[in-house]
Length: 120
Image (cartoon, rainbow, N blue to C red; front, top):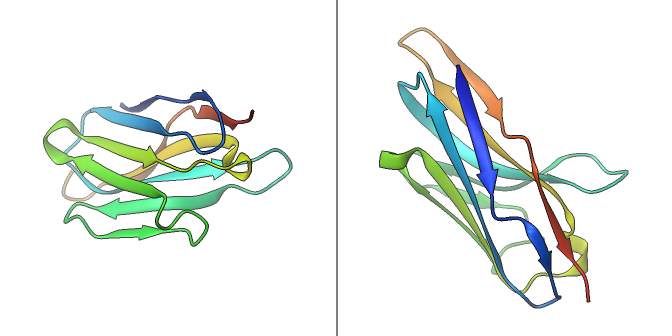
């Protein structure tokens, strides 16, 4: 079984910073891509940032210049450094990974979510 475990959420004031982490464990052959999504109350889940195994990144326009995604391939871990946080960044943040389980099997996996609240 594959498990994604997130950490690092919490309450922060506007303009502050948080760093989210997500570690994948289990019977993993390799990880093709990892990313972060978020879902605010009453809204659909949306992509925040994604990174491939080769380090190519893409970001939602709303977070460009403020958030940075990175990964440690050796540790199967992805990070999201969030700076200059705004109240509209408040949401549950979910880690996602496209994991290669074998030469013929792969799948998308999700973490349990971590709450980020930006408020004064």
